Image 1 (cartoon, rainbow, N blue to C red):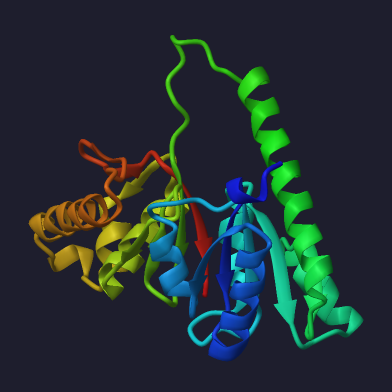
Image 2: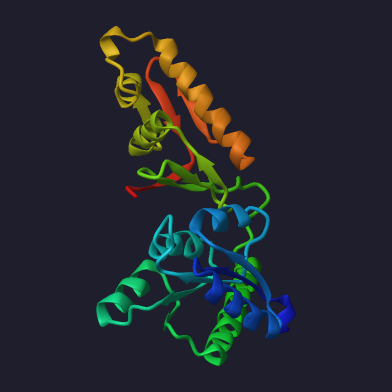
Amino acid sequence: MNPDDVSVFLVEDDEDFRDALADCLDGAGFQVRVFADALSFYKGSLSLRPDVAVIDVNLPDESGLEVLGHVTALGVGAILLTARGTTSDRVAGYEAGADIYFVKPVDTHELIAAIRGLAAKGRRRREAVGRSAEAPASESAAAPVWLLKQRSHLLVGPDLQVVRLADQQTRLLAALALHAPNAAPRDDLLAALGHNPEFSDRQILDSAIRRLRRTVEVSAGIPLAVTTIPRVGYALRDGIVLDPN
């Protein structure tokens, strides 16, 4: 594999270390993009999916262990960088989805070899999937899978789009997800919004659903599949994973 064809995302908040490592990887022929925190990484991923992500554990806005959950779900090679080298730290990193775990200071020759190996492995896997898992034209596409980070009020899309939600929108979407793919009753959804179902106008819920749909479609570029179930409530047809963080 030509190194110039390998895209690497480096997520590291230490500016000096980040710049030095980026220069090293660039010198090895990789296409390198750098990010200082998790959110900028998510936004950068909207336009390009890397072959390999190199992620520091201690990011200012989110743990690198949490970021791993996003990149591994897309089949992207994941390398974790950290100053912590105990057995329990390594186990936590691998359980979170790291392919390779490096303790700082990093041997750059070994890191470059690891990136090349992961990139080649990932491309072989994608090529195999493309050959063997091509669906018949009559079959509908699989529903998108989203990740809802409840404490952060972030919805991460199937292509790592990042949507910032209001607190009420987060609670509404979580309530829909708990019932999915079945219909969520109106009373449950109103309660999630903080309203007493006995004394609330049904239009409150309808308006909240419309705002949620609009927020997601404008920010992510694809619609959120929430359908109206007459006399019952609403049903979320997309897949969604709830993350309490």
